[in-house]
Image (cartoon, rainbow, N blue to C red; front, side, top):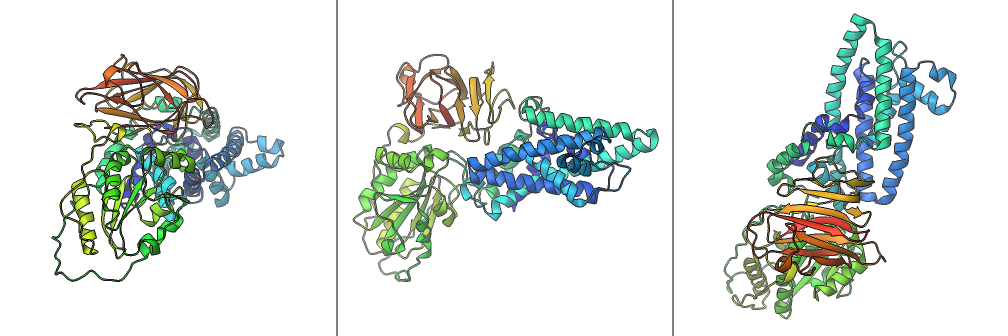
Length: 596
């Protein structure tokens, strides 16, 4: 419920966002007419169309986006005809094409009867197809949850709440506009010219959307930073919102602070745990699209075993830093009856590729069973919320503890020992594993003041110049002259897609000011393409001894696969540093920054 309220509030804020301006004339064109038969059906159609399109785009992939493009073209034509009939009442009489007749019906003169509910609803659907809100943190989080959880009532309800908030703001604007229109009509008798002016405004809105200026120029002309307000609301709601199914964050996202693991002393004289076996816990494993290091596993295969289920994904820095401990536990306690099951649930589209996952498992030295959860069926079955997530299951198939995020390794191992002791395996209370992660798997250093930052426009924040991202089209970017802490900028030709930015030519650049010991970047290249060369600078200089494991001292490196690349490893994390990367070949795919 708390996240529904947050989604609604974020939708209300869209009224002060510049991206609402192109569709505002479509709504205000209904000013001065009965709200229940005109404005309300229009806003309802707009909210429902936006919800349907956003849901399909999040879960349906490229075909849904392409289908929406055709819908947008049809809506642009319909609204252009609507604008012309507002400006020229005789236009509909002189032309006989069906679309023009439909536009004339939608327009209906103010002197004639009220348009039908259906025509207002249809105009609202067309508006919803064209509306492209400036995606802030809340909408980005909702769309991420939709992509992970799949099509379900919960994610659609959140999108509908967001659209409902926007419709509420527009309803207030429409009611206020109706009063102004009625006043002008009574006092000045200029309704004919007001009607033509509104038609011109609608036509201008169509032109803005058709040329892409609604998500480009208008974003840069923003007079208010709604993203900052949304982020403040999100932080305020975080303890409650993080519990909503499907709203788990990404690799570095904040997750609920786990309850400390408390262990009761093992008492040999205590009553034995119930012998009833619960098969429901492992039923979601049937949703795996493949298995690595084992034949498919089911509940029957795990009966009587202590099981540690690890949700992870191979480009997640937090997941990679937990792997040394999980590998060590799997090796140490295998003979005592512990089974570790890794569940690879992807965050990015490239992580759904089974070949990529198998290569990553091999490169990371993982020998325990791994379920490939490319459709997030197991994720949903466990109602999981984040990466990484550990589920400790006893020999009766009961989940005894859940742990989200990194840390608590000593307590986690003692819990494993306790569950094994309960199962009569007599695991020793002491003798914890000694783990030293290397490279990207090393523990984070010092106080990290920079958090995960996505580059795709769906979840991008802190880009400078503010509002300057051009979604889904090739654009030449001028890098910002000054970049503040935890902000980033682009230079050169880029195409910024929903979850990544693609370098459209050699010489494309990216800069980020950070405060941490390590900087990582999730990178990729087109399948079958040659490796992409790049060069890194730190504070304008080659990294030298501050280089990460994936580059040379002079800052040179290559993108040879989709994965997380460690580009910076500073001696210490004190102070701010400017990271710059230049891609010497086109085709680099940039997904997200993470830090340690």
